[in-house]
Length: 295
Length: 276
Image (cartoon, rainbow over all chains, first blue to last red; front, top):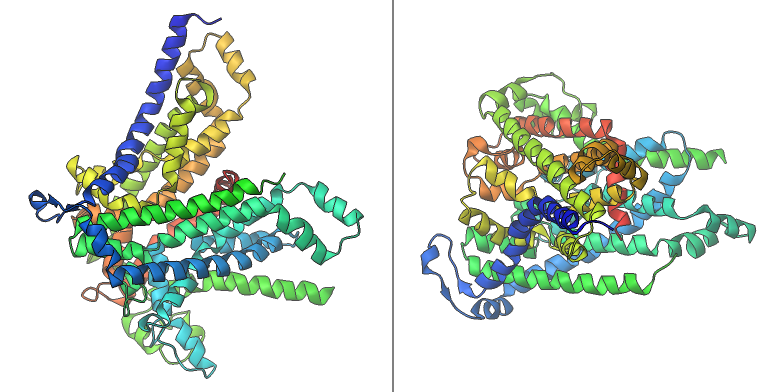
């Protein structure tokens, strides 16, 4: 039995050890949440911080009658849903491919990670030029096979999809590795049992592999959702929310109102709304994980 | 059988090309003169990727005229400071969470980890206000300090520390080692792989960060590389050759570091998935 003094000492040390990390996280991650709640009830212009006054729910009421806000919700949701569909399915198959023992498959794994480790700024700049209507790489390729060149980022119809393509390209590495890790965690036992039972390739895929990947898949969906809601940098660099608000995601709109229109109070209220949306989606998705615990 | 193998290989090669081609295009273009960049517009050829006349002019210009070297230095200062601090601070906290039981331990840990789910973009404006009120604005410290508290780091290291065999610790305790001594002499020396993994992930993350430095740093001479790059897109300063050269300089070290430490990075991603 430890002496009480030594035990107290140990607890003291324990707290001391976590204080640096915990206090920093508290100050810079937890406190800001409360602040955004608080200032969302104010009329806060950063250039005139002394003039702020409480205006109750006015910011929220404005938000709910703000067409640009609704548009940003639409843009964000559209982007998110498309990203989930078009990211997850290809990445799953690439991960399957990566499990095969083909010579040089490691090269593919490295290649898909290069876009992932590169900064979003660099990727946005490169793709911005690839999408250039006059001399971008894509239009060069299109015209060389006698197809007409596309406006891409300059067209309200194509801009969002152009950004989508870029982000899918960038995140493929990360998502694929997540699937790969999940695949490698499945004990061989299951596959061996299935082979003994005479399963063919399709049955193996749909009856064994995919069901066993439920947890991984749900995690992938969660992370893709959260990341899709965060898309900011490419928009800032390429389209600034346009053309015609077609790429004006919620996060970008928050930035615009906060740092360009200087309307911090309103921007905070939008941040709070965003917080609850993500929180809500996170809760719903976690329900799925809880309900389907596999092995 | 052979057809299957070959078509699979073709698929693999196409995918690799898709991943690498954009970089090759920009890097090739960075060695072209301004005139050549505009002239190779009309049809695709090998010269789309390879310069007819190889020139280092763009690279020279970005270092001389817009002081790109300073931006690189700034990014290095910030990224290295954050990474070293995160490794130190996170390992201390992770050790405490993993090896010492104290009241409130699990609650505090869950709370810290929960913050991982708050997207940066939600907390960013108020973080800006908090930082400013602490007089952390327009300085290197402002770009460094807010990021030292890194819940992912604590999570990752704690996972690892939990798996270090108790026998090592017990042996040290018998030799009269204190709690802190165990941290220094037992835990740390046996934690090289996760520390490298965390260090790599954190370094890349700091090197690539954009939104925070952009809003918190007004002085262009202290600005980091990503923001400097973005400002080169400004129509006022836009010279394609320079932009391409700057892009090449920014992402080459990252790609090289990644290749060297690949397996650590992949491990890091896999650990993220295990959290589920």
